[in-house]
Every structure is written in structure tokens, then in C-alpha cells.
Length: 509
Ligand code: ATP
Image (cartoon, rainbow, N blue to C red; front, side, top):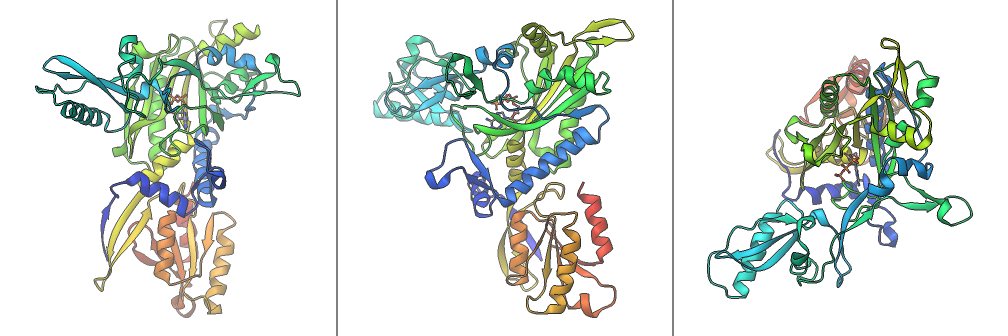
């Protein structure tokens, strides 16, 4: 059997289609037309997501001696968000098109002057994408052609809308209408969802859905220190839902309005070598991503320039992933100094210090924060794992197969148990016995419907690493062996039950 592998030209479309077809991800409230920025996870998706979470929790909390876990409430005291700076500053710059009523994030809306022989003859605009500059250039050429202007067109220099001067704003065309003058100047838009707590709706009942899980760790810092035998350096981790009223949710589950975060606050001594600890955590996160199957070739680092950091921040490095729509942030690792605990100490009047035995001094610990989104990891593993192959069998027959190369650690189904024939009790009884034994510890599927080749293809698409087929050799030959078929290589070999359990134990952890 030989294979020729290719990722489809429109990988994103293929992934969204597979996600829907096989029940990984659905649009939320689809029968009512959907709600932009919200998603549901179907039967396979919920398993994949749970496995991502469980792997992170096991590696980050259970397998480390210096990290403990917590789970804090989604709605917290509104003062938390005042102290953290979110009420005043958790904003994105918003631009409205007065005519179409479309809304844009100013830093995702690009524009450029059209310069011919040194003179500006007009402006073009385009939304951020992999091809922003090409689109702007094409629009500039088209503008010049339509106006029949002679001369040399300069290459466009793209800027985002936050960089537009007031006199330029009136001249930049709206991407929706193509007409200048339709866009408003950018204004700050707070991304926190507001709600009201209790029966009264007034200013004092206002509360927020958390836009990050991190504040839970800061606010409970003292509770954890006082009730656990933790000693610096140590971390507090949490997994949970966060909510952001994103202006332009897009790229499927990459940027949504309700999503899930896995965050850890690692508290260190005020005199600790924070840069060293920061680097250790960046490396840890990269190694973890590889341990769940993300290839090195898709990962890179981005260090935020010093001048763009918040005043309290000492450094932030993002682990970037090559998504089909471009290289984007997957995991942010920030060195935040003692800012958060100090803010909460000042606002609550409750000191957030620890006592240092060596120096006999009290101080506020500093923190390193790795923060990642479960949904972004979910999309990354689909991106890296998706392939369409042309398979040629021994007889020369060609067939297309879609395969999801998911690591056994996170694959929704670990093993599919397939009796060769549905109507032969000797086969189905043995298959059901194996299935019952496997499902005590693993997510497994029993499938007896259709030709064996079809069943393999179904499992390939679901990302199932192994299929075991119970055939006549299982029953008739000594050794009680099954055919083990491996997803990626499609190789088959015979295996005993205990060898199968050993294989699973080694690869699913
Ligand atoms: P971005 O710049 O992409 O908006 P951010 O820097 O605001 O992200 P953080 O506040 O650092 O993100 O959040 C930590 C992590 O949470 C991100 O690295 C990302 O994985 C995830 N995340 C943030 N916003 C969203 C969202 N709207 N949808 C899905 N995941 C998100």
C-alpha cells in the first residue's frame, strides 16, 4: 500500500467541514441561525477537549510538586475587576461603519494612501488577513486604473486604523461600502460582559462575567497559602470558562466570545531571577505542546517589544502557532512582577504578603503567568493533524482517505474494536468481551457496521490511533491474537490482549 499526502488548499474550510460532519464542533444555537462567537462541542469534540484539559491538569498540577489547583467562580465581586484594571482598561479600539453598521477592531482594519509619482491620489482599506498587503496593493491598482491616472504607483505602506490621523479618517474608505467618510474615529470598547446580581437592576448590582481566570488565583492567594503547605516558588492553576465580548470573533473557534482558559500563576521571591524562571516556563509550555502532538515546525516564539508592554510587565513571550489563516498567538507567558497582588492588597486593604524566613522580611511575591486557551489548542491539533491522502492498495486501486493524526494522549477514541463480521457470534462475542474490558479504562468504540475498510476510514477521520479486528484467526489459531491496524502507517500486525493493554499504557497518559 502506498500513500500520497497533501493538505487541502483551503485547509480551514476542510477542518470546519470535518468538525461539523463528524460532530467535533457545531455552531451554537444553529437552528436559530447561530450566535456569532459561540460554539458547541459535539460527542467527539467534547472528548478531545476533555483530553486536552486532563493532559494539562495531570502534567501541570498532579505530576508537579510545586503547583496546586483551584476552581473559582465565574462571577466575582465587581471590585476585583476595578483593582485588576479591567474596568478601566480591558478595551479594544472599535470603529463603526455608519452606513453598513459593521463594526471593526481598529487594529485589525488596515489602510494605505495610494501614491502615484509622489502624490497621494486616494486611500484603500482592507481587513487583516494573511494577504492584507496584496489586497491593498490590488485595490490601489484598481483605483488608479478606474480613474485613468498615469504615472508610477508606489508599493502600498499598510497601517492600522489606530494610526490614522483625524484628517485621514475622513478619506479612508469603509471596507463594507468602499466609500470614504463612512468610518467613525476609533473609540474604546470594554470587552467584559455585564450582568446584574440579585433581583434589583441598578448601578450597585452590576457584575461581570470573568474575561480571564487569572484573577481567581490572585484573589484566593492568601486562602491557598494559609490552608496548604506551599512554599515559594509555587503555582496555582485553574481551568475554566472566560468571556470576552470580542468585536470581531473570527477564524472559527480561534477567537470566540465564550472560551476556556488554562492558566497558572507561578509565585516567586521578589529577588528571584525572574528571567530564568520565565524562560523555564516558556520551554515547559513548548515541550508540553509537543507532548500532545504539535510539530516543532508549526511553533515559534514572539517576544513583545518592551515599549508595547504594560508598565508593570517585565516581559511577555507568546508561543505562536502556524494556523491556516496565519501565525497567531497560542500561549502567552507573561512576567507580571508583583502588580496583581499589590493591586488587590491596596484595593481590599488586606495585605498579600508572605514571610521570608531567611531575611525575616515580609514581601509581595512576583509572578510568572502561562495562559493558554483550550479552544486554540483544539484548533491547532486539528490543523496539524488533518491530512487528505491518496491511498493505492496492492491491486493498484486508488482511494482518498481523510485522516486526523491526533496524538494518542488526546485522541477522542483510543481504540476501535471491530468484529470482522457482524453476524458471526464467535467473532462478536470475543469482540464484545474485549470492548467491555477496554472501556473500563479507555474511551473505545465498538463498530460492526459495514465493510472493514469503511470502518477503518471512519476511525481515521475521527483520529482513532488504533483499530483491532477480531477475525477467524483470533478464534481458530492459538494465541488469541487480533489484527492491530495503525492509523498513520495503516500497517497491520497481530497482537495479544496483554500487548494491546501495554501499548495503551505506554501511549495514553
Ligand atoms: P489576543 O491577542 O489573541 O486577543 P490575548 O493576548 O488578549 O489574545 P490573553 O489575555 O493573554 O490573550 O489570554 C490568554 C490566552 O487565552 C490566549 O493566549 C489565547 O490562547 C486564549 N484566548 C484569549 N482570547 C481568546 C478568545 N477570544 N477566544 C479563544 N481563546 C482566547
